[in-house]
Image 1 (cartoon, rainbow, N blue to C red):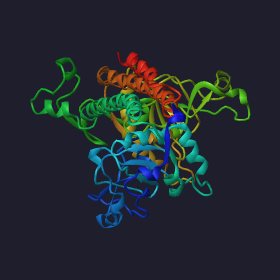
Image 2 (cartoon, helix red, strand yellow):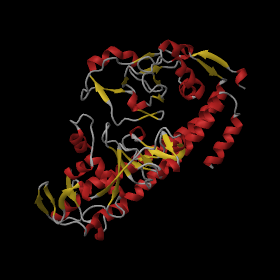
Image 3 (cartoon, helix red, strand yellow):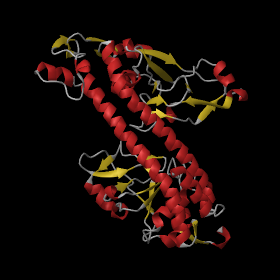
Image 4 (cartoon, helix red, strand yellow):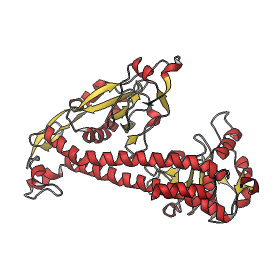
Length: 437
């Protein structure tokens, strides 16, 4: 049990002193050395959608934090306490000042230390020790001196195997979702951006990957429009013709009965990372009474949401019924079955919406902004046909996301009890065996 476990300062387990990364990376350098920042940490894993590359000259001064497989990373400035283990394919990258590098003396320690750092008790210790004068910061000395439990190797291995199995299943679901999203995104681009089926028919070829009925929806020639050449029979128009815009609202914060319920209440902080599509939970929740006493509406799953004030252009799909604040718009398709079409269309509109919003005292997208964005409007049946192919892909993403969230909740329940020794390995193993049976 935990009373029999040793505990040692973290510094006794490291091969090199715990340190932080590049202090002044400068601007993005195409072809430079990739550098991980706090924004690349997503739920204790790494997202590589927005990676800054730094000059090799700058990076060469920080060889001490050049990444190796198995290094443990911890965010120590701003959004502190997020943990990740460096995979093999990121060896040679570097890290920013806001991230600490923990290089363990023995590779077998990596996963154990990562789980220990994620445990509530250690997270609490780090939070108590953090300097919050300007921006929350974990001091390196406090991190080096942090005492971590060190049970016998067989116990460590057993705990890591249990928690690791859950992490691996969650990662597999996320990777599957990334593939599904890429397939749907590629299909949208082929049909509605590159017009591949039209080009194929214009050249006397059969469009790839579709049956005759679907191919018949596309013309075999183009015509001029204010957008340039578009498929014949399609037309140019405002993006507002494709969608219904719904506003949000906020219950009075002074009324306690309106808050802390079970209705997710979306704000920009709840937007998923790039490519993750769905928001399944929110930081704040409201009650049915709160919903009834504000202008927000309950949005059905697969509703597209876009942030419209301040941080403009964050896009999400509602994964469960939810409401949203007044700084967002919900976008519903005017064509039944057009949910996937609206989501991917909105992603394409983001840059234009940001340009329209930029320049005001407070960046804002209005309903009129959507009228100003001209786009190619396909026939309704083409949108419906796309939905028949893409909507099931999004539903699989949503289902996988819900399963991953359930597994994460189980992992987060088991983690502190296992790390503290309050839950026996045999008990946890039984739970996992039942789950994966």
